[in-house]
Length: 261
Image 1: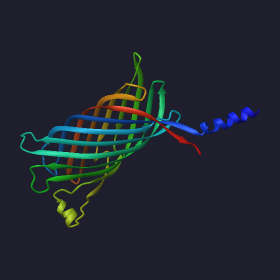
Image 2: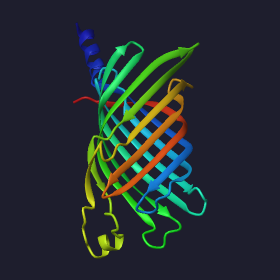
Image 3: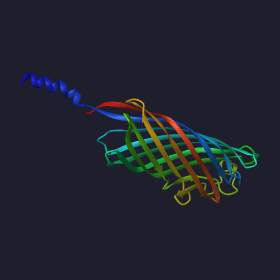
Image 4: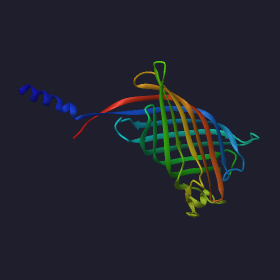
């Protein structure tokens, strides 16, 4: 009887410890980018962009809900058709959301939910004397869905993952047609510069298609395609940034141990 009590006391701290997996991904990509902003120019600018993408997601097997966090930074240089004018673009986007997991098949998992998204950046036209830059700032609520198919190539674990977001509604900063930044910030002349937007006025979308190949128990090679298609029509101004990038990076998994109260 005494040894059973001692064994139970020894196992008690172990039972109070919980393990959960966290997956982090770091990727870099490059590809064509198109810039268009009628506040700066009526021309379309085409060039090359670079994207850095970092994601983090918990992987607790018994949990139906998970938190997905993504950081995306994008930089591009582009020129017009005559190559007489150039534009520079840079922006940072933060995504955080909750997704519910559905096991459709033993090898296929679907997740659905929503993300809150904040974006901050600028476009700079090197040829403009007045109003050479356009600021970009917005927040959105985006329905989100993912699908992951896991399989094996010989003895190597592999997977295909698709993720998509569409903006449902949000707020966007924009000068009005013909309004200068001097009027907005120096003279304080507000003219409908914070604009509610929906899928109709800002029909943007974002798609990821990624292939994973396991390198070890805790590291995976990820390659794929990222299409980030941002566009809006507000205050009689049109703008878009279309980027289609080839991505490559590494996925890491690690355990987080915490004690239950």
